[in-house]
Image (cartoon, rainbow, N blue to C red; front, side, top):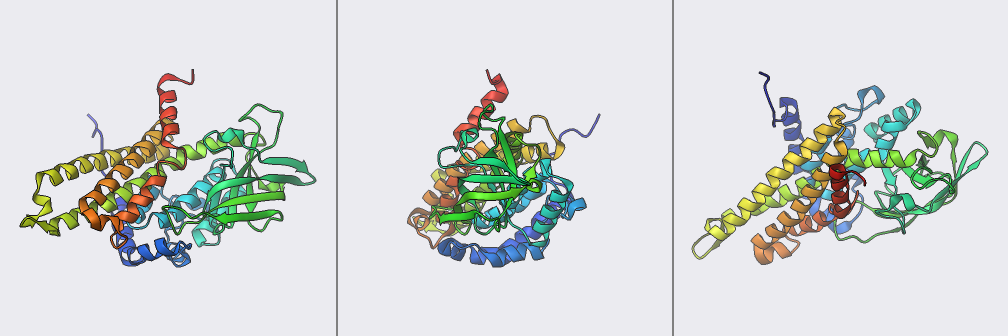
Length: 386
């Protein structure tokens, strides 16, 4: 008989979690509220992650990364998200932007992107959504037309995370307007310094503040043939495969948000006294926290099952990633709402972190595919596309 199932992290992963938690609690937690209030990209924290070797986590060592996989990245993002979800998007979105390169890029592109991220020379963003094509991403209107030695791109991308902070952008555009929808899109690697590249206004968001969200505007933006990622007209497949790989990371972010709120609320309820005893002694409160604990633990299983599926090259990664992202983000919204409730009026003010974490939780149900889309994906995996 074999050893059977294992639900434990390796000793190395446990040590990694402990080291990240110490760094986060020492350096990021004290800045969390200020980052949220200022809503400016925290360059000092970005430098901190690079200096501690965390920018290269999950990238192949052969290209200059620190090694590790989706599980390790999930641990990193979860631990940061316990205190500052906007900061967790630095490693999460770098990987989102880099995944198309890792999936289909040239050796030269892989070496340049991975080493650049690990060394702090590059941050990356992923440009898929447009003003009129969100969930229906294949309906994008951005166009790339052949030119001497490359392509000229015109279009607007919306809701681009870390736009303005990033130096490199993986961007998708239609290259065969008369082709079959979804079979006519190409992926490009675009520099912020490219002629014709510009940014729209920064969005004033409810949550994940400190992580800028802006439009990316391309007006006769020239990209050389060397900027094509993968094959021409095969970009939409790259985009969808990228989301399969990145949804477990967003699930880990949601898990961290929920866990951070839960941990804070537990300690608060142990100390807060009403009617002569801690409010943690009231059955109504105990039942609320028992329900939250069940949600958190099942979300954690789903998150790391999906991350392990990425690392194992599991053919059902689409299924597991959608389940993890959908469930963990629904749990994050539910748990943070209950944590605000547990703190009462104190939970509703910005002096306490549960208010911020509740605002942060909402986006996890929306980006990288709304939870309604995740349910569509899951159902298709069960019944087929029909």
